[in-house]
Image (tube, rainbow, N blue to C red; front, side, top):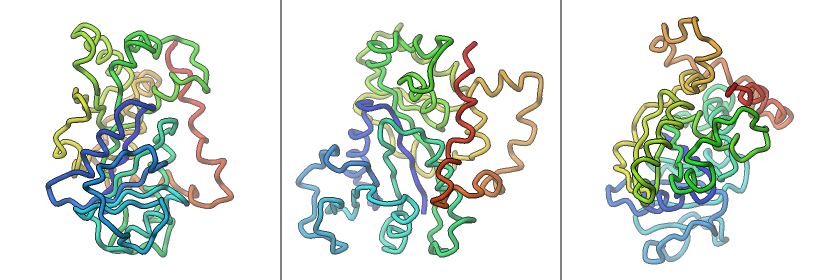
Length: 282
């Protein structure tokens, strides 16, 4: 069961992209998990009358093309298990709320095969790709074309820090509303994104209009590679050959990182390595 994780700051265009996904005419049956269904304006013509899974509350919207959109009401592991047990979806899209860091979500998903013994074995979740939507207009107006993301003393609570983490921990960056800023401004924003994140593919678009083939079935996500794709990691490890074995560890990256993230008692562990992220722009 492949998963696309969608992150990006509030108003960046994630919902527009989600609607494109839910509207898809390719016959792909998506289950979309969102934080708040009220924020996703789904075309009424798409909505199937009557629930498909016996839920009459407002936590689930079923669509004519076989997709569903549901609210994250419980633990993500349980929600993914429920979707897997329905045996009717080709793909899961998780929209992280705008104020979410992507890394703990990725850790949770990656830990399921080893940490959740009762998960349906034929539908184990596989995180395929993390897409971060960046709003070019907002970068220009609120973050000085991204320059604010490079200032030296960014506090852990600052919005800039969150935006940086979303840019650093992903495979693809959708630079949305690209035509609403000048080419020079766009170039500067691109350069700052590239300075923060060396590896991610940057795709410019408007209204979240991106070819699905570029964000689905990519096999891009590898926890170890993404965790070290932030530029500051390379600066810290300058001189060390950090890329010599990237290709060897594709298969075992799930085993090391995720020892106990799903035990309720260990919630405090989720952020054990985030503190290092905030001192990298000296």
